[in-house]
Amino acid sequence: MPLPHEPSTALSIGASAPKNLLKQAVFLHTGWRSAGTWVWSRLRELERVAGFYEPLSNVLADLNLAGVAASRPTLTSGHPPLVAPYFDEYRPFLRENARGVTGYDRRFSIDRFSREPDAPFPALQAYLRHLCEHTVEQGRVPVFKFCRSGGRLPWLKQAFADALHVGVLRNPASQFASGWLLRQQWSNAFFVAAPFRVLGLNQWDPLIREVVGICGVSLPPLASMPDDAYAMACEQYARTVDSDNAYRAFIALWILCALRMGEGVDLLIDMDRFGQSREYGAGLRAAFDAQCGLSPDFGDARDLVEETRRSAARMTGIDGGALRAVHSAALKFLKAQAGVEAGFVEVVREKMVLANELTEAWR
Image (tube, rainbow, N blue to C red; front, side):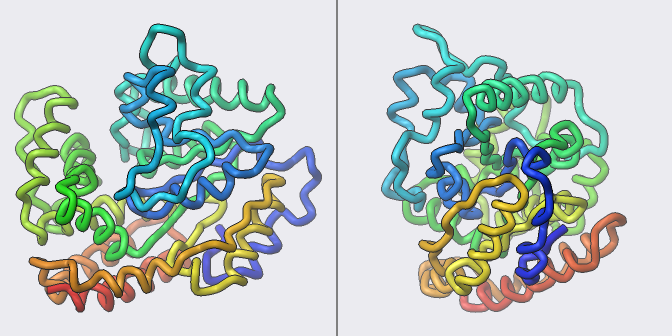
């Protein structure tokens, strides 16, 4: 797996591969507020690409043709301007006077972390395969931007071996701050609620229970309720949850997704290096070109680490110095897992060191 601090490796990947061996699709495995939408937008602007935004999102269950036009960035999203609405590529899979993308099931919206695929996975695989095949028939390359695929990454990599699987990793302090400030300033608790929802609906899994315990997360009681009802309960919980518990839940989900990336993405994108190194962006462009024949321009990258530093004064009510312990616990968990390359563990260690530095300024 190419690591973000080795641009020369990225440049050499697949350099001698024949054109007929190029990957036929791109799966971007990202997290909420990881800046994955920006990466996806750089690929989507290419003429040969059909960019599918959040193909596992519960929004797709109720999407209709009129709703596609309205799916654009808001002033508070932080997303780049888009030439077409987020869900524009789903138009061929929508029916007149009906709601829902063909083949989509609401059960797809909750990530799963078990080793073996769950019962809905064959349907999920068929749904994504249909999107891929239709797009390829049109002479285009499907590029999927996921926020709900981290736990299922190994399943998807095996099922879609002809796709380039890309992990997008951002340091946890910056990623958390991006979502927390939306709750703090705009009363948007979605991104604070998301880790509680995913962890809570997977708490029967031994791996989830282990990480929740290691990180000291307090989850909303699950009781006996449908997934949708628990998701709503998490949304309410996130509106008043204390910052320490919110951060612990976020780190628990972050390290779980990092673990799955470390077990074998084809390419790892380090979002913290964009904006600081033009050479890094050029190396990634070459890596994409070598593996799937796409050449995205990453030249307009922002320095996201510096933006986090500038926003530190707005992160009120959080004792940043107390967060070192949870960073340390999460890293220790990752080191104890089999099948994760030492180089990837070092990348995560560097992320935790950076997170310690950034959160130190939070008060």
